Image (cartoon, rainbow, N blue to C red; front, side):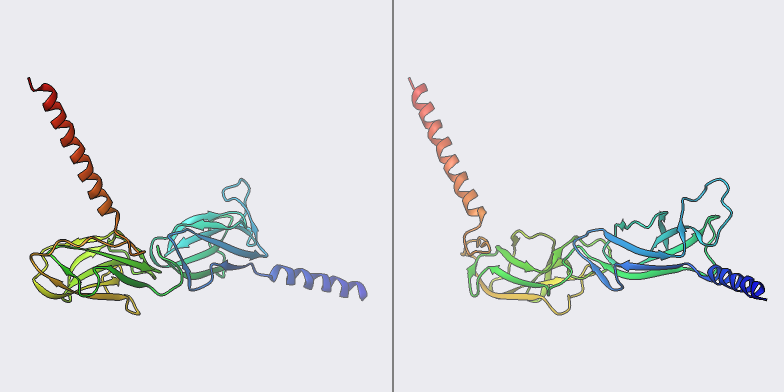
Length: 274
């Protein structure tokens, strides 16, 4: 009698062991993670009651607790995973879904399905911080000619060229406005020259926008009122510490070189004169 009970217990234990189903979970990134700076994302995962093996070996019989995993990015297979080591994925800007699924030796998905997924957002910008912009030049009520350099300082935001990519946190481009009208789309940090400005008192504006041209939220904008007169000279841009930009130094060097060149030409004429 005891032997029968022992056999039944052993049989029950074996059935219980066979009933343990494989499990898969994605440890990182977590759902809703922002992947900053255009960097790839490192995917870490955990698998239990499942042996990872290379597919296509001779003699594989489709063991339900043995096989490999496949990684998907937005529904497309991007990686065959045959070991439990982390792996990286490159992500273009915008929202993405990363999914992993277990497959048997013969390449069929486990049944019932064993998979896990997370949603992330990739950006060229920083992961945190509120975008800000400040106009450094021209200064308020400055008198200028019909052309003026506009310089600015941007914080917590990365300028990227728009090419139809989805919006992403803390990335986009800059719009320059004259009297509330957009006159230039900018993706550079260097000063920008605005020309053909109308006479009189006008307002120069700058605002940060998403990849699709919509304003960032909360708004990141700045403006400055100036006076334009035909007799005024073009204003030079200021660097962030308030000094004259390298453009002024470049002009000075050019003038010095021209003067030296002219002096050498005069000396040569004196030597050749009979």
